[in-house]
Length: 120
Length: 107
Image (cartoon, rainbow over all chains, first blue to last red; front, side):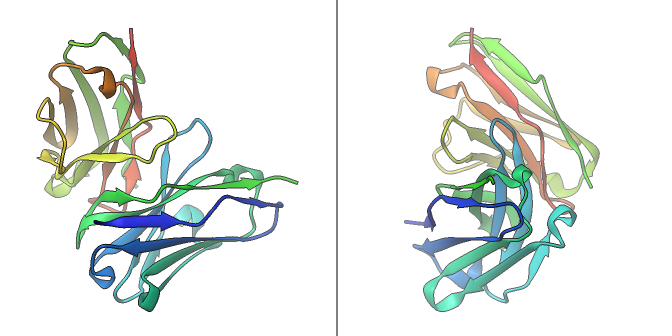
């Protein structure tokens, strides 16, 4: 069965970077795109970016363009999301999510979420 | 950027009632490239529909999705206790954006 397992919670100081992993299993990794979506406490869902797990190309939301990097490691089936220059407003649960099918941008499988807390 | 506006913000209803949630887009969503999600506290979102009306695996048929262009709806024909949650729409026609959500609470 399809699974996305994310790394554990992180606490970071303002200005630092955080790198969250998302390990995929149960399907052919390279055949799908994975999104990153975040949710600040008590707020809604915010799309951050997408990575093509086959070719490695990425598209980021303009909001995060300057400080977001998504990468993938094909042999391990793992996607990484790194956010730099953290500020308190980046405190949120970060989710990875796989698309329903290639080119269909709805997200059918989600990781369990990773809480990132930014605090001095 | 396509902005999605969901209404109402909060609905208070009783089990057994019928409910319709609205999602309105600031520009036409081509190809009906709109999804609906359900999210319960402490859980990741769960896909309900993609392509506006294609039900995801395991979603009960009391849920239905419809719409095109700029107006989309999610209908629950008869509310079950487990349906009380927050619902989000999301478009993937031009980049990706989510609506702000509609909270469905028990009356």
